[in-house]
Amino acid sequence: MKRDAASQSMDSELEEAICKLAWLNFARARGDVDSCAALLSELKVLLTRIPSLPPSFEKTPNAVEELKIARAIYENAVILSLKIKDREALERNCCQLKEFYINTCGMIPPSSDEYPFLGLNLLRLLADNRIAEFHTELELLPLEALNHPCIKYVMELELSLMEGAYNRLINARQAVPHETYVYLMDLLAETVRDEIAECSVEAYDYLPISVAKKMLMFTSNQELLEYISEEQSEWEIKNCSVHFDMAKPKPHMNLPSFKLFKQALSYARELEQIL
Image (cartoon, helix red, strand yellow):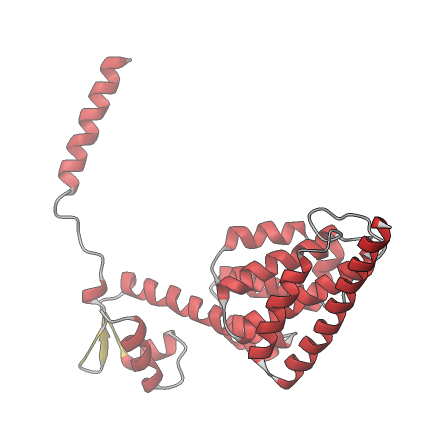
């Protein structure tokens, strides 16, 4: 009797999850972000009561269906994170979803969105300039994944980034292989622009506005001026040029190079005496 009661309880939780997932899909189709967020919160709480899910993977009678439902819920969670532009939630949901793609292989049929979402996770790391983690995640993918258009797209982006082919990288936004990639491509453009800005400060004292606009890949002077106002408050506009003097790294007056040199010599002498 206890086993039957537990089985009925699990069945009811599965039915509730299926019902709420259907409402979630309906709300997402209508663009109702608030309802999506509320339903996702309820569904995630519900998932904590299902033992067939990671990390336990208990073999319950409904394990296959429960794993498929949970995976679909986290796929929706990733999409919602992109909609509301919540980068912390996006990272968290991508990590949770990846568990279902990697650790349920052979347990449930693969999702049609698996490689697009794995590519999205790679793009997320690229947009955050986390190149080492990008390569780690890439090495974990199966060989057949590397031929998928979404994975190949992100790999080509990383190659453009490493080569400094920034225009090619920015232009790639027009050819995203999946609609979910647009927001992260905008973030990647910001990352690239910030890298160029940092290099410009190191390399130049000033640049003509027309040159700075082209270098930072803006289409108008107004966009450049707004960027300076919002992101580069130490830059100055003088005589139709962008001046970087105030943004230059300041020398450490309290630790001049001569003093550091004397300290290094002193340490060397002490080390020589010890040996």
